Image (tube, rainbow, N blue to C red; front, top):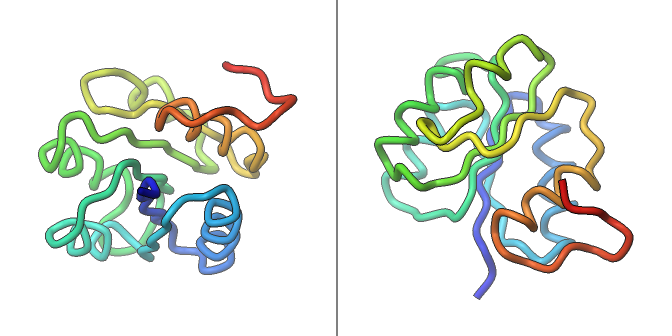
Length: 129
């Protein structure tokens, strides 16, 4: 069964890019344009990992993370943002943030981290972090 990933970003081009890249890597991918859409989706669906931006309209990724933790304390979250100053506040066991990437992110790095978290084999030539 394919692992399920929810991508949350207000930029449609980024959602499309991540969706295509992660589908090509063998994942089932869902998208949401903001935290409000993501939380509604999660009310009725289960995922194995969330990739989220921080700054978005309506419910931001920053505001959404505590709700994701309540939804499932073990749900791994990867943050991809243009704001590096949030890394120290977010990464850690207490909120399930398992990776922090500054935009523009290298897709190989993002996919490698996802593979580590979800227990898939890393693509050849990519080292574990």
